[in-house]
Image (cartoon, rainbow, N blue to C red):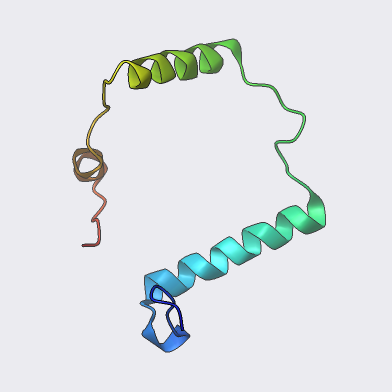
Length: 78
């Protein structure tokens, strides 16, 4: 068994739920297609993404994930 492989019995409930949701997402796209296919971004969304990419390339970083999680009341796993 590879170093990072786990048995199902070794997974946490959250990890198992994530795997199931991910598998379902893949199957739904396979069966029904991508619901966003053919849609275009609104100009303001495209502009925001462009600004974000420019800031990232300039070395700027956004808000740390732990601060965003705290603000949203999300508990991060360690």
